[in-house]
Each structure stands twice: as structure tokens, then as C-alpha cells.
Image (cartoon, rainbow, N blue to C red; front, side, top):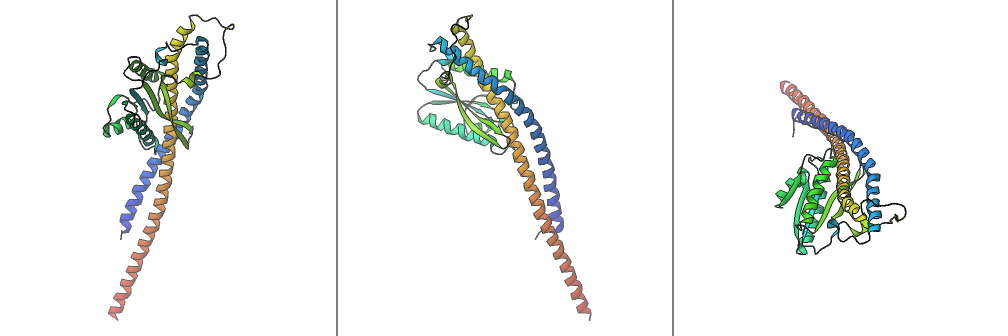
Length: 290
């Protein structure tokens, strides 16, 4: 049976851990508010960008000559796994890796090659540990991603697609719903999905004169649409990570409090047992002297 000193040391250790998890919860909560404000500000712009692409594409009509819209037989698929740089966020990273590996297994079952592009240290290290060959990884950007980060990733993806090294691009990330809830989303980046261009378009003939030509405008809009889509996923993932970490640290703090209560009860019982034992020894000694 553990002694009072052993239990006291364990209580002190758990209490120190509780202080750390509480501090991490407060930090994650502060970062979450900023990240949530950024993604809420971007969403209307991203939606309007998609609508703009739909509007221009509807006026162009035939868009198969656009490099990033070209569809061909799929022999190689790029999977972009968007994880975090740090852990201690519950199942945030594990869910992305699990879903990405499911996609990879499905594509390989169809005889297709899988190319990995990973965002975040946790995803890159986990996939390498699982003996996956990572073509490109982007680390140190998940806490506060910038548009320049999204542009760099988009340019790399577009280059691989236009060179014929990959025939389809799928991105897996956590979509932010609330501080307590995130949803794993899978989006096809390239070729730009037909449903992304099949929304309700606003016919612009007679209202606007395109300068330069509509095809040239669409040629410039598609890369921007790709960048915005990736940037939105980065911000969604960042907000999701902070929310998941805040929730995980809160649960850890609550569990630490429960454990401290249990250990305190055990310590009191151990102390009572020691007092009882001492009384019995005193009584036994007195009896021996009489």
C-alpha cells in the first residue's frame, strides 16, 4: 500500500500537470478567438471568388483548354494532408492521417500511384513512420498561416498537375464548426470540380465588357481560386486545431482535478490507517506492561 508521502508526491505531480494544461487551455482559447475571426472574415470572400469563377466560366462556355481544368485518365493522385505542427489536440491530427491513408489505400487498389504533400510536422512524421514517401512537406505555418503560404503550396500543386506528374489532387483537412466540433472534409482541388463551375451563374453579356478576353480572365482566375481554396483550408484547420487543443486541455484539467480528489481520499485513508495502527501499538504496549 502506498504511504502518505508517496501519495503526497503524486498529488503534487498531478497538480503541476493541471497547472500546465490549464495554461495551455487559456492560450489555445486566446488563439482560437483570433483564428475564428480570420476564417469568418475569409469565408464570404472565398464564396464570392467561387461565384466569380462560375460567372466567367459560364460566359466562356468551352473551358477544356484551361490547363487546370483539363481532365485526363487518372494514373497518379496527389493527397494533401493538412495537419498541425504540434500535438496535444485530441484526435485532430490522427483523424486527418487516418482519412488520408484510407484515400491512399483506395487509390492504390485502383492501380493508381499516390503522391503525398503534407502540411504540418505531425502529419509528415507520422506518414514517414508508416513508410510513406512524402514528396513535399510544409512545416512551421499552421499556427498562423499566410496567403503567401497558400500561394506556394498552390503553385507547387499546379506545377505538378500541368507537368502531368499527377492527374488528380485531393486535400483532407479539418473544417471548423465550433470550439467543440470539427469535421474532416475531403475536397478535390484539381482538376477544378465540375460542380464548382456548375453553380447558378449570373449572365454577364450586355452588362460587362471583358478586357482582356474572358478566356484570359479565367486563365488568371483559376490559380487564384486554387490559392483561395487552400488558404481557406489552412485557416479552417488552424481554428480547428486551437479548438481541439482547448477542449483536450480542458478535459485533461478536469481529469487531473478528479484524480487529485481520488488521491486525497486515499491519502486520508492511509493517514487514518497509520493513526489506527499507532493507537493499536500503544494499547498493545500498555497491555504488555500490565
